[in-house]
Image (cartoon, rainbow, N blue to C red; front, side, top):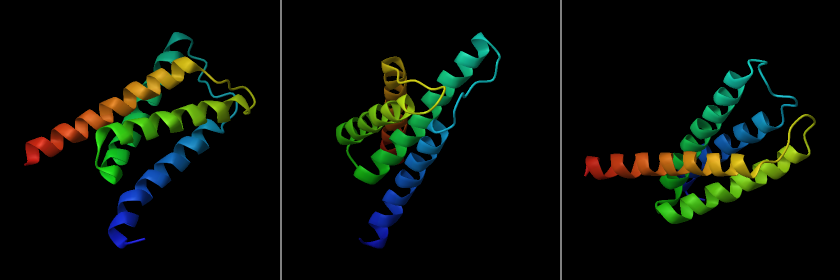
Length: 115
């Protein structure tokens, strides 16, 4: 693998590992009731927006980056199914997908403005 490809994919792999590590935390919650839900869903959007941005940077095309990101979100939910105190949620996949789309659109727009 060339150095430029490695520099494009290493952040993607590192971020995916961070998402995996966060998903491995059992009984993740703050006890803040409704705010807990708002904060956790906001974190989903943010972490997957960054992931989408990194995927687009590595792949260079929006649709493949989006599809790969959504595929990872699905596997992340399957992983959470096996973590004590966590559960798999199709709603979270949808929220993650919105985050991925935000990250991809942000980078696409920034790249267009830079040209």
